[in-house]
Image (tube, rainbow, N blue to C red; front, side, top):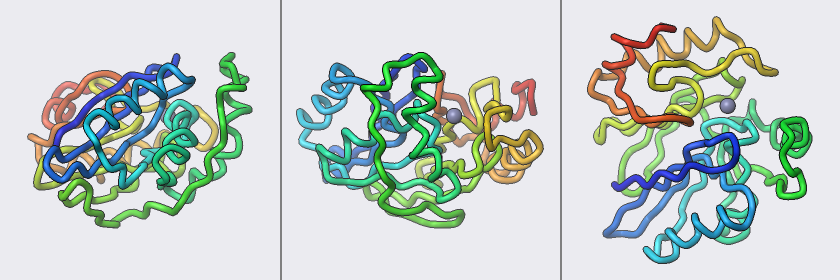
Amino acid sequence: MQIKTFIFNPIQVNTYVLYDPDSLDCAIIDAGCLGAEEENELAKFIDEKGLKVNYLLNTHLHLDHQFGNAFVTERYGVKPLAAEADEPLVRTVRHYAAAFGLNDDLVREQALGGYLKDGDVMRICGAECHIIATPGHTPGGVCFYFPKLKLLFTGDTLFAGGIGRADLPGGNYVTLIRSIQQGLLTLPDDTQIYCGHGPVSSIGDEKQMNPYL
Ligand SMILES: [Zn+2]
């Protein structure tokens, strides 16, 4: 499985395109593209490689992680999957965009196509992916864990050298720390982590060097 990273929208979210160069199966995690230029950049990559978008996944539904959902759904016919507890954030995305000083005319709501639940196992680009619920940054935050590939997509739960904010609506600091310690730090040290913002790290590095844990 290959991973292509885009950094989109003024909040600089990492949008990940996972794909299998042989089967051309593809999944998008946190489509953050905002506006035609970023939408075209994402589509150009997918279309030039001839990828089939099988899944559109959200680690959580803060605005910067869901800006591109409507575009991907319209263009590729896949609806986003996220945890049910974050679903109310779909309906407030334009409101929050305006509150952040962004052009809310660019923002469209996109309803979910289904829910991700803790313990779910999916097949993504031919690889097994486990859904790990990690509430705390939002009530419905999840991480995507590929045990055989030793890959973990953490959204805004865990960053290289940091953790997600817990002071936004629905956030809870104690819950966030418990999610990280019980759900993520128990994974093998050589698990690479791909975060919602910023660079790649590993579970082992974060255990040793993350000042918040
Ligand atoms: Zn967030």
